[in-house]
Length: 356
Image (cartoon, rainbow, N blue to C red; front, side, top):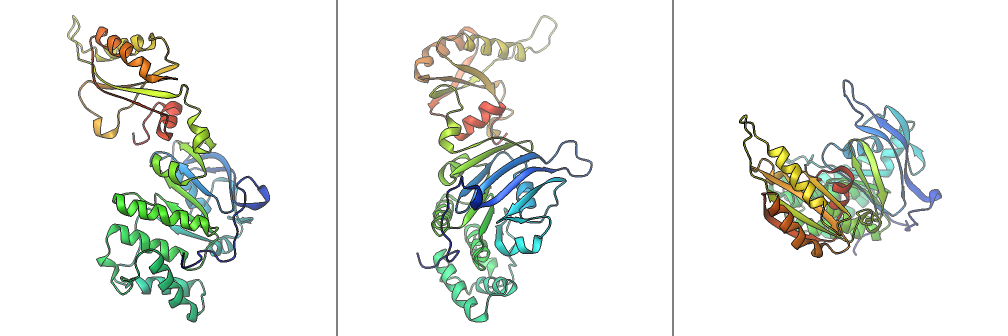
């Protein structure tokens, strides 16, 4: 590629403690009047040159964790280190080693793209002679070479995201924090940004990204910490995390459970749902059967319930599941078979959909 994001750095094994880029120890953050901790006693390390992901739903504590690591949020207790520097004790030194691409654009729309980059470089002390050259190189690398003179207000969402990435790289940070980097981007912009993130990895940049996109975490991250309610539930490679789901495959059923009226006129849908779950659990060969929350686009659909059956060969469960649901007086509206994904891991651990 045309420019080194972080000159002179080499990749290091993610499991080398001496080469940790990020170290978090028993980190807790509780906001005033909050009932629960936003971040609840988490610990992890990120190796130099590693792409590390924090995966979880909105409100899991991912952004707060990044806030602590980037000196913007003061922890209640615990400690965090960036390239061996204590974040709380020496925030100015930390800021010189990191860069952040936030979830929401914070670009000055009244400026031209190249002006934003050179101003950022000036703030970080880059010599005047280097600013223009580096700005041009990064604009070209991120597909904005012919748009450097444009006002930011003319940029699409994908272009603005790329410009924020270029700005973050102007001072050659050791560590790059990406908070939901492809949220709301179109598929083409999303794939382009994924490619640039992989390029940064090749240059030796350490990357910590937060996402609730299971495919993004699977595609990009060498290791993933799944977070929920401020805690890290599990931390491993995507391949190892998927092994946590019992059985080799999953059969997902979307079932319509009709409402019935009892003798006193009360709805008993919950009772009927329970009977569906009971008969599904009696199917031979299933290692685990559970009811899970439907996706957001199906929430509130009258009588729709979602069940997952795990087995070494989920296809062998289709006939039995169909018969069992019919015997319970319900109707299968949709079914599909898949190998476990990171979302399956999250559902297995919490009983909820990642986007619930």
